[in-house]
Picture (cartoon, rainbow, N blue to C red):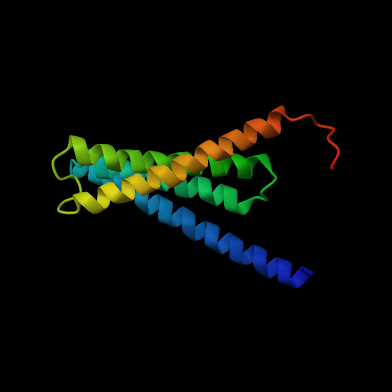
Length: 141
């Protein structure tokens, strides 16, 4: 990629990152509103956990995959998305109609979120532990 194309790509990445941060702030505000004003704890926690995962995904997106900040961002993002799924699952069993008449779709979305992103967190964590414990002077075979 030449200089001009590289600069164009980085500007596009920065615009997407700013948009992701704006969306995260909106979800945080809506989550706090739903929790405090509307009194819906589960919807509020879901919105806040989603916004945390967006910020972490933004950090991972803005850094090269081999940097520590990108790896930590991916770990935190997967964990937050997994927590979002767990909150959605827990809310369907502990609260009466926290998602209105959409209890079953919320339960399915929560299960999918927990399985994929919770599993992704576990796999990324195992990979990071292996990377840390691996000897530094390895030779390729």
